[in-house]
Length: 352
Image: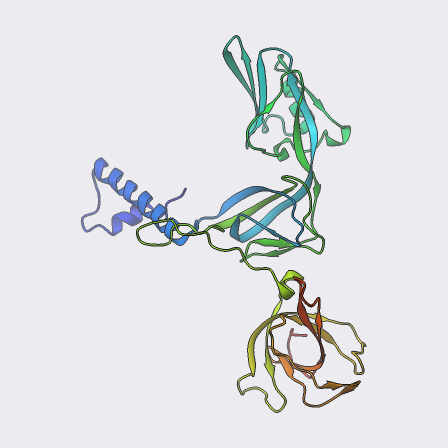
């Protein structure tokens, strides 16, 4: 863990500075302790961290990562597949462990353990890694399929613990299928896709840079007493279906900016519908998805669209409400869909 300030910055806060070795050592210890206490109190790390996470499959369109906010997603892959097998035929026990830097191969013979290591840097491909293991003499390795030979050895999955490798080969797995059909919610730390994140145990691998605020609340009071875990975001209504992309205001008939809106700060998902469309008896240009609790009104009556409907404003662009309907009533994705007709905006604008 990195300290939040440097030694030189700490010395600036001391009237006479710190000059002796003992004073500097004390100052370093105080800075480290204070940095940890601040991060524990805030429940997060303030320095960027590179994370490599394995996630079980879930029947959900969202995949919550362990920490947030997200700064960058480097790789999302799935389908852990055995790409390399390795075994030892000698000794009373043998095991293989995949670390961040390479393989650690351990044999126990006559009560004495011998450990061999092969670094990914020295064997950058799966084929070269297999060759390096075979060169050890007491170990054998085999690439399971020729198509995996040129895969990067450093992409081998880091499963917890070591795998037994005496006589029966240990299967070293890699997430071989790259995935790119997702959106990222950086602030809340989740990935969203149209398909579900289904799969088996540790089916998904996500490599990312995170500014690390852990989902379970860390220590939050001055005495550093653990508190209850902070709840996960509640996924319901329109947020169960899609990522929100606008915050809008709703004005009743006869009310308009600059007067205050009748309903303010409404989060929703606005999407252009393509022109022309009709819903149900007048052209519309956009649809807006919002939660069922939003007070959004149309003036539709038996096929006739009246003049007393609400107007939705996205920034300075007005949208006339043509028709409002409720979808997936009583289900987890229960929400409202409004058909809107865009009015003349204040140009130039991108709120279209």
